[in-house]
Length: 86
Image 1 (cartoon, rainbow, N blue to C red):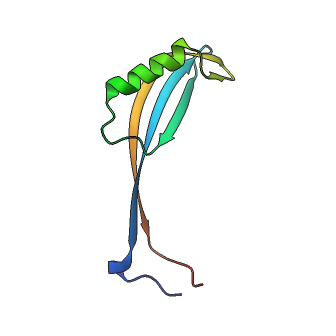
Image 2 (image 1 turned 30 degrees about the horizontal axis):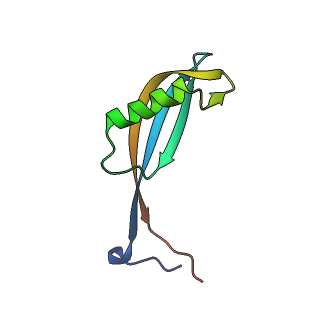
């Protein structure tokens, strides 16, 4: 089966924002958003998380979200090494 020459490999990079909350049961609940703004600040994310908690926007099987646990922006790079023949 044909493989792409090294100079034709397709590489894609994606970012995901992960906001981790603690619920009433003490378990972590993660909300993920694809492709956050490049200029998004930690303060903006924390403010959004505070609003989610204060307005009780989401709930989980372990109850309401009650605290911020973590914030991460995850970068993912994919190298496409093979395309199936048509």
